[in-house]
Image (cartoon, rainbow, N blue to C red; front, side, top):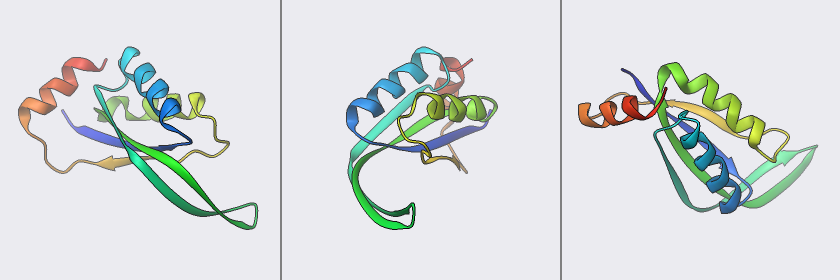
Length: 104
């Protein structure tokens, strides 16, 4: 089994937690790490913007990654959310087994 991480950025910790819980309840992710506050600087509609946001890393299987990314985007408050798949080169077999046991 191939484990992948999905990195996503949210407007606040409540949104990150709500979407993380949904992903786990729907068995799209086995685990989600909600990281501390981050500061994002970006261009939006031709203006330089900055915002306080919250990042999260969702752990899932390669076969469920696409469905998870789609679901995060559906639940997300942003018009264009940052949702990116990060390949995992190596993982402990026991952790891979945990992920496999907790996603459909």
